[in-house]
Amino acid sequence: MNKSLFLVLLFHLFLMGQDCPPADTVQINPPQDLWSIPYENNWNGLEVMTWNVQEFPTSSNTVNYVSEIISDILPDIIAFQEISDIPDYENFASMNPAYNFIHTNYGSEVNPDLGMAVRNDCVEIVNYTTLFSSEGWAFAYRYPLKAELQWGCGDAAITIQLINIHMKAFDEGFNQRLAASQVLADYIQNNISENIIVAGDFNDEIDDPENDNSLWPLVEDQNCYFTTTPIAGDNYYNSFPWGMYASFIDHVLISAELFDENTLSGEIQTLRIDDYTGSSTYQYHISDHRPVVWKINVDVVELSTGLVINEIMNNPVSVTDSYGEWFEVTNTSIETINLNGLTLKDDGGDQHTISQVGGLLLEPGEFVVLGVNDNPAENGGVNVDYVYSNFALGNGWDEIIFEHPTGVILDEVWYDNGASFPDPAGGSMMLIDPYSDNSLGVNWTTSEVPFGDGDFGTPGLPNASSGVLLEIDNIAGWNLIGLPVDVVDGSYLEIFPEANTGTLYEYNGMYIEAETLTPGIGYWLRFDSDGTSLVEGLEIFNLTIELVEGWNLITGITSSVPVALIQDPDGIIVPGTIYEFDGSYENATNLVPGKGYWIRTYSTGDIILSSE
Image 1 (cartoon, rainbow, N blue to C red):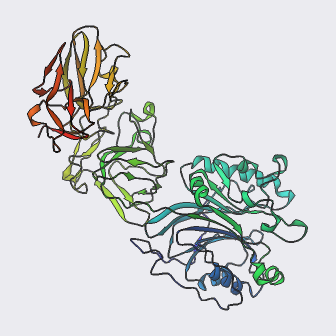
Image 2 (cartoon, helix red, strand yellow; image 1 turned 45 degrees about the vertical axis):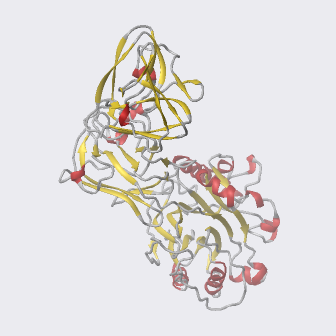
């Protein structure tokens, strides 16, 4: 729900190649210096603080007092609840230029507003809105304020969704809180790959039994976790510490994508500000709630080179765009690239932060396919490695941009409705050479290799405008074979359907039964009779094969390679020890496509096969 939201202060930075701590840090000069409250900021990570500031401002001193408290503790992000006077809040914002402020504007004297403040030297507000416009009753018509935020310091960075909430209080609000908790749980489930933080005044404790716990849909949900769990039930940490209603009701909840960070470095505490200001001053001039702050360390996101957008299917024909769009990236560097934490976006409103448990790794020379749907039965027959959301590929003009959290563009392609780039329907546009400039349309062409349900492309494979078809002969009995082309499905019975089931073996010091064929590796395979197999795939022009000391089974590439032209830069091949098998062993003179060969080496190392 987009109600009237006002950006009080925006210092658009961002973090491109900045130092840590940033050189442009803005100092806060509070109007007074009455207390020495401990500093909570840590440049190695993120701090998120939630604070119900009780009908802000509760007295004529509130603005100055809260400003001093913030200037002492300096958290990265603050979620405020109970803003009763917007002009005073805007005045408060103007006194704190180190922060950018946003807020809701419910326009109601009954429902105080929500606010948020982020340090402008390390956090960018990407966008913000209110949520759940149809769930007013559940949230007591205080619609949650959601902001997408990018935190960064040096090369450490993270993108989060922060949702600020203020649930209905007291026993009469039980059913409303219960309904709101279910709405939030559903939202987290539907955005399971996002880094979501829900912070605010939940108006209930999390350690009550199920029948008495209005937050139970969140408490029992395996996709989220209350970071306040370790200190819940300890009166020392009560966020509302006064009188008969003393309790711990202000919380920070995280989604599953942040579990690892919380386990490794998470800290949670209630800030007992009243220990420094005095209880009376705090209650009468500041708030009736204490702030709660959660901290994590944030890892460096690798600033990779070699990430290349390599193939784009923006206009499938065999299925609709909403099922069949995909694109492929490759890695032209010598180091593994982790795509986790990178932002995928266009030049408009589409944006998605890549987040996959364990990382989304792109090995040198390999491919990762990103798409809108990972079910081959629905997406046209594509094996998609990662499913994105909030991102679509236009059929005419559009952009694919990979951005590091610091703002550095790692790669981008702006295609142009056929002006210079290909503009196929039912076929991918593909980069002719992954080392060429992919910003130029002249370096792209249209794939003519059929896949899946009938569209054309080479998802997950080297680009080729068309494939090759080879005939591979076999004898009755055992054969030394290999895979001379790149294929989507390397299952040996797909490649050699007449072979005997359960008879594929590779060799690594001993024979090992195998199920799939890999280029460069030789295998034993048995057939009942002489025959010929037709093998279709993409041509392999060059191949580096890693060998171990002693005997190895290898295979060649798509074209025949004379043994004398095998590149052996380290001199590891024992002369005269390359053998072929055709019912008996003989010294090989050529590595023929589809055949396997024994080769002996002095030591571990690489050999190179090339048709060029």
